[in-house]
Image (cartoon, helix red, strand yellow):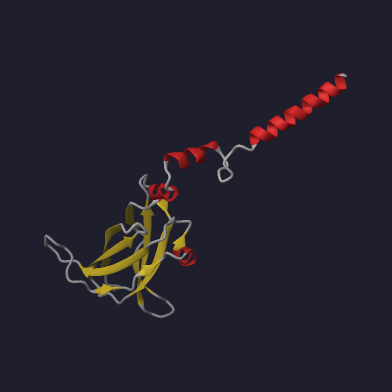
Length: 178
């Protein structure tokens, strides 16, 4: 009789566990995601908090002569920062513009000298091609022959997926090699 009671208790325990363990939402793996779903019915909106809020041009940016083509190029390093100041990778479109720097002026940017074709980094593979993981920044090579002993202002604009425009400027001084 004791063996029958033990079997009955084990069967009840198994049925109890099966019944109560299957009550979770199949799309959620923890109670945390269920809380998020209840508090924010638009699940995609959660990712807005991880979008870039600032663009930074790193001081590694420089003008060099390409050894292979003997053309001048600007090696530009750009990082996107989130609300906490962390460098992040994000789908976006970059726009690059170059202006001569006007000395002793309230608006130091002169007339635009150059605008490059927008760099569309929405596609993950293209985005990854420009991403330098060890720097946590993007690297771009912009071909352009700059005049020696001239100072330029390089303006970088980032168009985010949420249609937000972020912009930053960098002063680029070209000195004579002699």
